[in-house]
Image 1: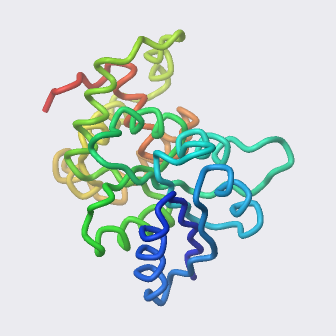
Image 2: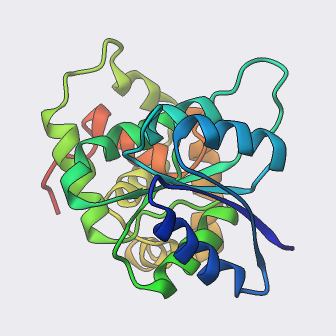
Amino acid sequence: MTIRVLIADDQAMVRAGFAALLSAQSDIDVVGDAADGRQALEVSGRTHPDVVLMDVRMPEMDGLEAARRLLDPPPGVVHRPRVLMLTTFDVDDYVYEALRAGASGFLLKDAPPADLISAVRVVAAGDALLAPSVTRRLIADFARNRPAPRRDPRLRLNGLTPRETEVLELIARGLSNQEIAARLVLAEQTVKTHIGRILAKLDLRDRAQAVVLAYESGLVQPGAQ
């Protein structure tokens, strides 16, 4: 199946470069581009992409607000793409909120081309891009420094079994399904089943939101290994 991609970035050269790279892949079709958040919403509504590459800083409407609106559409809007945030180290303060808003992960703008292609495929497949250690470190930093949520997120974990809680903790520490299976001496398919149940019980969209909740609840302490 072809992955439909929308590229939202205020730099024309970045959009053109990403489009050329992705369009060269047989399984990826760049269906549109946008120079700011408002354009991203408008073009997404017309083209129905599977994945939106969303720059964080853009004029008119930034990528974070555009991501929020795409991922929490008004009643009657059925289409909801997956969002992969594009960022640089100097705007990391947006990353945590982007994940909380429902983005499936983020990618550094200077990542190698192969990483960008892989990221689009990973996100389109319904997974979250949370493997790189930098992602885990950033989430931990902002979980440590942000104000406590008004509702105690620990209450949401009460419905999990001890094994599911253990799996959630390892997800938040950045382990892959294969690594979790090895750590807990389980079949990888069993780990996938546990993760599916965790997401369903906690009403979470994907691993990205699971990681955020794990930090907010205190299940995983920032900086812990």
